[in-house]
Amino acid sequence: MEIAEDRVVMFHYTLKDDSGEEIESSRSGEPLAYIHGKGNIIPGLEEALEGHTVGDQFDVELPPGDAYGKRDERLVQEVPRDIFEGVDEVEVGMQFRAESQAGEQMVTVTEVEGEEVTVDGNHPLAGETLHFDVEVTGVREATDEELDHGHPHAGGEHSH
Ligand code: ZN
Image 1 (spheres, rainbow, N blue to C red):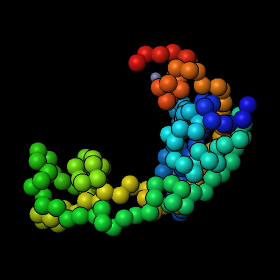
Image 2: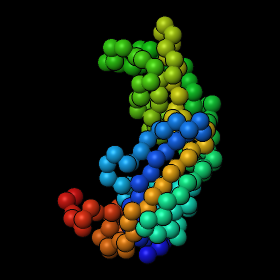
Image 3: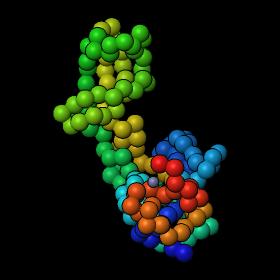
């Protein structure tokens, strides 16, 4: 069975950045499952999976525009340290939810200098060319219930 719209797809992947460093991998656990054609995984990857069948292994290279987008330097801001209420130690690498005009977004602390904290609202992988090593491990028709919910149910069970 080929990967096509409204089918449940299971696949393993290893994600590397442009320098070949591994960012994450599904291979130590369960494969990722999603319903094809719903925009629930990054667009370039979903497009690359289309038409593949179980057992297929392939590499996908995605420029930023097909992955997490280009970096937007306007999302980098200096903020006063005292807006981090209740945080004892503000450190580089910490992530916070922040309200902005664009709605709620995740920001990452990229610099702390005295009372000035620099936060970056870009996705950590924005601006990166991503390399996926993909192996398709399952393809089946989605049930009506799964289509209704927009996500697969493991083993046909339903607990939510
Ligand atoms: Zn559900």
